[in-house]
Image (cartoon, rainbow, N blue to C red; front, top):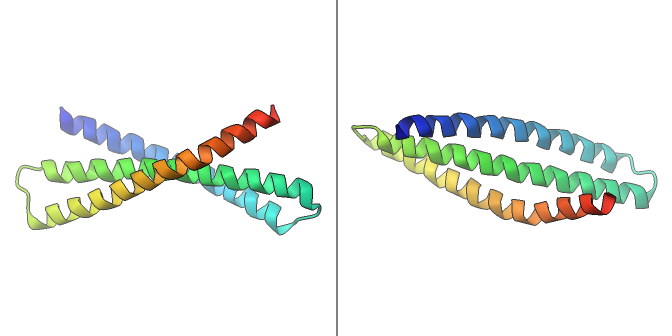
Length: 124
């Protein structure tokens, strides 16, 4: 039962990771288009900052999803009946990378979510 739950977590986290990665890239493209063709400093500065904040916001969500994915894959590696040295090594590497991605994603999410939501509230 737990193995099915972990597999479901891996599939959902991978899906969210791909989705948020595409969102990040779209805002990155928008940010660089605005930054490259500055005409008036006041208007583009605000739009450039909004695009940058959205890009970082979705990048943080991508990191959270990727961290969840890698952590779940590490737990799956540790749940096999006969743990070998390779399996433990791969699981430890996945766990370290996953926890790092998860912690840094949450940290960046807290930073940029307030900027995104405050910017959206001012525009309404």
